[in-house]
Length: 451
Image (cartoon, rainbow, N blue to C red; front, side, top):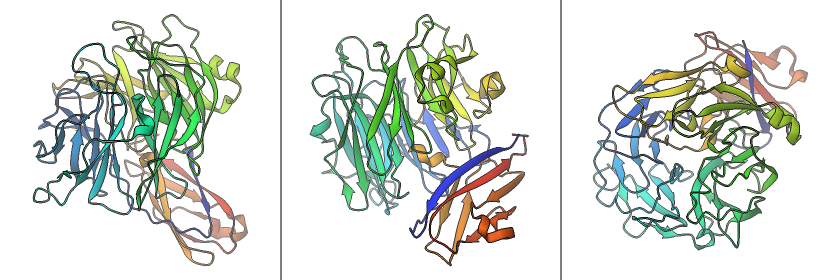
C-alpha cells in the first residue's frame, strides 16, 4: 500500500533544514528507554530517570542523545543529573514538560514545564515556566544557566497538565501551546520562539469547555497538534469536554470547532495522537483498571461533528493500561502501557480500522517499566521530508526523513509545466521551479516491511 505524504512550499521563501533525528532517543517510565537509529525501536539500558508521568528527550540532528528530563530533574547524555538540573516545576501530569531548541542555535534549549493542581504534597504550583540549558556548560555536558531557571510566564499562571509544540509556518520558529484549565481565563495560549528569543506575550484563543480542575483531576489527558500543523485536539479528562479545532501555524491562533463526548461507557480520554499524514486521530479511553480502549477517528469528516464521531472504530478492547500516545520517527504510533514492560504500537496509523495493525506487545523494554507518559517532542519533527531552496530558477533540494529507509520512493513536485522533470525516483532529488507560486510536493513511499 502506497501512502502519499504532502508538503506545501511557497516560492520565493528560503528554508534551511537538517535531518530531523532529534526524536531518535526516548527516555521515560521506570528507567525505560528506546532508540530508533536503525529504523526499528531498540530498548536501551542506563537511564537514570524514574517517572510515572511526563518527560521529554532531545537529541542532536545526527540522532545523538543530548539530555532528558521528567520536568523536575535534568539528566545529561551520561545519565548524570546536571549540576543545576533539579527543582524544576513540572507537575505530576503526562504533559508536564517539553524541550524546545533555540531556533538557529544548536547549543541552547528551552525546557518548558507546567504544574498541576494537587490536593496532596508535593504542591507543585500551577503555571508555565521555562529554564535554559546551555550545552557549553559543565565541560560540554550541559547545564541549566544559573539565572534562567524556573522563569515564570505570568500570562499563563493558570496553565496545567498540557503543553505541546509545532513549527511556525516559516519552518524555523516554534509555537509552544498551553491550555489554562481554570477560570477566569479558560484559554489556549500560543508562545512564539524565534532566533531573537521567546515572545512572552501569548496569542490567546478561546476554549469552549469550562474547566476548573481543582480537586477533580479534571483537565488531565494529552493535547496534540497534527504533524501538518493544521489541527489541534485536547483531551479534558474528568470533565467530559474534549475539544478539536484548527491551528494556524502562521498566527498561532486556535479555532475550536466543537467540544465532544464519546458515546461509550466511561468516556474519559487520556491519550491523543494524529497519524503522520493527519488522516486519522487516535485516542485512548480510560475505562478503569485494565480495560482501556484504543480508538480511531476519521479526520476527513471534519468539520461535521456527527460524521466525525460516528467514524469511531474500536481498535482494541481491552487495550490494557493504555495511556499516552506518541508518534515516532518510524512513522508508527507508540502506546504507553502503565506498569508494563511492553509498549503497544500502531504499525500502520494511516490504515482504517483494525488494518492499522495495533500490537499491544509491540516493544519489549527488557524488563524496564512504562508509566503513563512517553517523551514529548515538537510535533513537526515527524514530518516525513524536508526541503531547502531559495528562489525561482534555482534548485530546491528534498531530503526524506522516512525511517527505515524506503524500499522505493516516487516524488511528484506539483509542477506539471516542467514535463518529465515533474517526477523523480531518486531518494534525495532536486527540482527547479521556473515560476513563483504555491506547490504541493508529494512522496509516494514503500517500506521494506511492505507498508
